[in-house]
Figure (cartoon, rainbow, N blue to C red):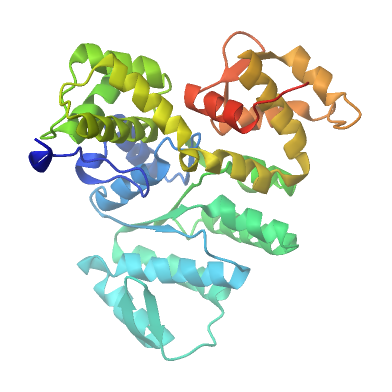
Length: 394
């Protein structure tokens, strides 16, 4: 059987697409309704819910008279590079549609552009003030008779990086410029869409500029429903050797608990490995349980949750981690227990402790079960924290 074994069509690294991706039509429909109203969008969701996959799917399947482009801009390091990238993306996007032929031709001549490629623009000149030219370029999009939609993934990462590098004013300037572009009546054929693996609101709050994004329309993306989880499992296991009965699928969903596409893909991948190794195509609850333990043993599956806390909340990590270590050991933590820890002389966070609780909720670490009682949203994360911090003396 091993030579004929067909593995499921899973993906646990890059954004999912095709049969590896489960489109949730209600999200797409809601998104395009808000774009039609003239709103600019912020996708709000914990990590690993699949924001990047959703954005790529929306960009690949635009509404009529809309041209879209998606890009992860995490690598952008400076303010000028950001404006350059946005300028490039607008022209790349416009070049996708024949309706913008004249607009693109005019831009080629005006800016000395030799070629527009997927990797960017090839220009004859290097003296372009991209921030200034964006203000000239975007109003001209109305002449194309299309709406240009730019999906900026990991935008919060760019702002956070600038802030951490001591370039807070550059970060604020970008936020001011984008706010101006979004609110200017001449910029109505242009939509910006933001998402990222860290909360944009939290990053903005660290530089005390929340009003610079309060015009964005937030679209909240949740974990999969049980029915949607069934659909995704059916898609990625179609034609595979492993066979999962509905009873076994139900056991799998209970085991995962928080039904993120990423967790489902991890489990199906591990189930397949065990099934193949033991030559069992009919999956049992024992295999499900074994797969769960193996997924947890692979630290690379969850290290990013810990690394990002250390990175983005460096000064506050000991306090945040104290909350998580306690919750991992005792299953739940109450707001009173958090407050007591906030008052500890080594933390001194009694004035803003709820900001960190809200961030842990937003980023998909904790969930509120009863009023002011919190637990890990995922058994995977709880087990991971217990393995990372097996001794707790708090």
